[in-house]
Structures are given as structure tokens and as C-alpha cells.
Amino acid sequence: MNSLILRTATRLLVSLVLLFSVFVTLRGHNEPGGGFIGGLIAASAFALYSIAFGVEALRRAFRFDPRAVAGFGVLVATISGLLSLPAEAPFLTGLWLTFELVPGEKFALSTPLLFDLGVYLTVIGGVIAIMLALEEEGL
Image (tube, rainbow, N blue to C red; front, side, top):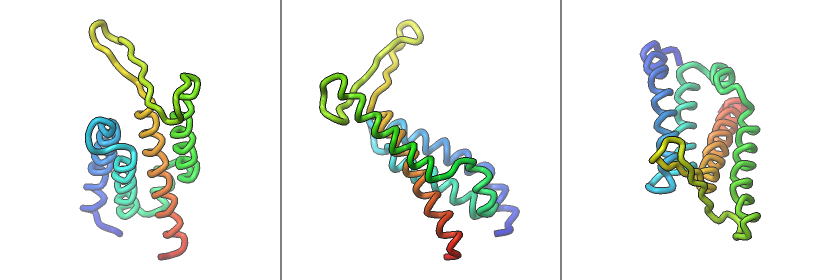
């Protein structure tokens, strides 16, 4: 599509939509959201970019093979499940590591968050791979 208005708006919207997808992903284990919905939102940002600038521009902007991103996401999600085994807990049991970076402020890292990030990457890679495959087929 060759629309100056769409290309101009897309430059702003893509970054906002990607930021929103990260927000939805990070709040997902406490409220509605999570890796799947965040990944779909991020993939929609890349779809908008593809519509505005073309598929070749999307390939240059994404930089990684989408199938590799999806595979890495599956690996991250699997590792998050395996981290519970040394603690003699069942596969995919949630574990939390709490620490203080600033005195009086506690921060927590968790395996559910790691799992959500793996799902996020898997969905982004999978949807973009499907979009690019459909474009190659000319559908």
C-alpha cells in the first residue's frame, strides 16, 4: 500500500503497540493478559508494519528468522518448567526468587514470568512465519 498517512501513523503506532504488548505480557500472571495475548498484539504491530511498508521491509525490520524466534520461545518455556525439577517439585511448578536491588524495595523473578516470555516469543515467531509464508504463496 502506498499511503503517506498510513506510513506516517505506522511509525508511531508500531512502537506504541509493541510497548502495550510488553505491558500486557508482564501483567498477565496477576491480571488478564499474558504471553499469548501479548504475542498476538505484538504480531499485529508487525502486520501493520508489513501493510504500510511492504513485506521486504518487515523482513529487514524483524532481523531474525521467525521460526528461530518461535523455537527459542519454546525452549525458554520448556526451561521454565525444568527449573522446578531441582527443587523436587512437579514440572512447571511456579518458583519465585525475591531480592532487593534498592533497600526497602523487593523484586521478584518467577518461572511463570519466564514461561509467559517463552509463549510471547513463540506466538510472535509463529504468527510472523505464517504471515510471511502466506505472502510467499501469494494469498
